[in-house]
Image 1 (tube, rainbow, N blue to C red):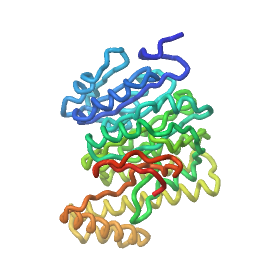
Image 2 (cartoon, rainbow, N blue to C red):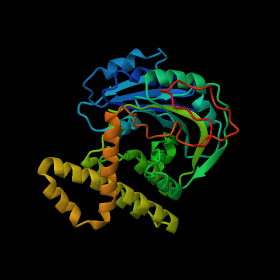
Image 3 (cartoon, rainbow, N blue to C red):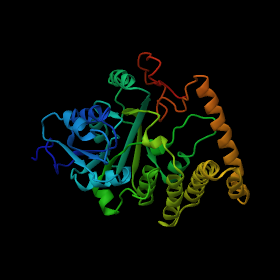
Length: 359
């Protein structure tokens, strides 16, 4: 039998953890170490996206000597989609898992998910924390969480609607999930990350997988720990990034004939992205050219007045809260609700937002 701990393993369930990284010297070590700690991991492939700091060195410092870690550096910054595609090209294990360079895997994640049969993609719950110290505490607390394997099947309509935020509610978009994916399914359907996208690339890939009839399972047990920081790439929504996110819907809607539920859900999601794009476009035009040109662009698009005005109001409230020192805590502790019959971990400190039941 082939050794599952070696790079390039072709054993039935070996996992390739791919980590795109940019200016992540302070966090990449913990991410790499959490992946190497999992015995099911055959290879960890870090692709440094032309960082200005020593991200590659920090990644290598976390090596455990088993020969499973490979670090590649791109000569020019190409964005997260490009880095992930390079990692896919330079890995071979049959199961692919995405790990962001700020984040960590919770112990036992792959053992639990790989025990579940019959899937093309499978995702578990995510725990959100706001600091590295919070991540350490959360990892310890969730180590004792009951290892449940009950799953639900995710369809395209549910996924698309699950990515539309509710005004005034905490963000829990399904595009944040980090599933395990079978390489054979991705290869069979020629699915890779859209390199024109630096925002929403996960949504696009998962939607295309579901359009290709992927069996996509969800599990409420936490297995992924996301460490949030204000200067993360995902927090930087440029006008051009939102334009590319909006444009991806054209390809999704043409991929195959849609059911009524799928078409309505994708249209709803398109409108939500369009509203975000319009807000950033108006603000960028105002900053660059003044109020007149920004107002003129918006004036001939009356359907966008409501989301732009609502977005401006939200931004003003957020700025007022920031001046008063009120934390801009806009997301729940976990991505999915956890059933009430699962006992909660011990009460955490203030910078660890854990959940023990529906919110």
